[in-house]
Length: 380
Image (cartoon, rainbow, N blue to C red; front, top):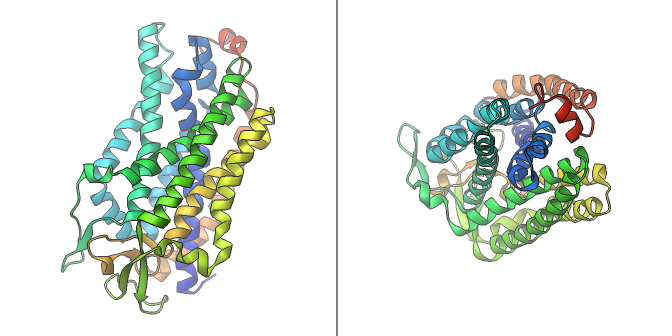
């Protein structure tokens, strides 16, 4: 099976988006749980109940993050090189925060010491909340453009600084990311725990959902009225060999809304984001936790694809040298590479989804304090 080059470039934009959504749904679930851990668990046994709802799954869920990073490296090597050099300290912050998760999950309950356990509870909060916040901040900076350029040897040079990433709009998108993750984790806890944790989780989900709706709307208004977007003025054929220096790009007011005007079907992404979040709040309030979890999952998908379709076809626009901006048409790998990877993805992604679903099916149950008490030495 050999697809034409232009189709493959678009297919890999879609596949990377799906991998990000998979990461947000799967790993976002346990990151939301970790963020809520010190607040919803009022005793040690309650906190162990919360941890055990994701304990058997969190490391498998983490693979979605690794896979998404690997897909960016293989499909868009120029984006990978530019992003990891530009966001280097932000990436280190994410990695150092993630270090707390495996140690926290595996060793938190090994010592019967309140100080030890409380310390790792807050460590799990940091290891869960910080990466989510940084990912949201990164998306906010992409929408504003990243200060980078290429030298004569096509090496990317980032001319900004770490603290410049922490601008007001990016911090707002960070709150969007964190609130939708907390919503997702809270709905999961409401579905997988017994009372009184389930009631606390349901209330947390409603608060997080309202925060998400408000900040998501504010970010959209800010993006449409206060942030200039990027628009391609002239470019070679989409099937041409990748070369980010052969196009002309202009910074235009309201450009990030252009795709919605040209392709109204793209409005489905923000509509799904808002509608699903609202329905998740209603469903969790009336105790329909299963459907609420489906809606919170769709909230993740709607928010991520809203950012993606707003920027399309840009992946990483340059605020200082707009013509050097990276798009799906000129930052992709070779035709052969994309085709081989596409075949592998078509074969293996359904397999991964299938055994992940089987894993959750076999381990599905409501976690109770009685179970933790009976299995004190084997539970997380």
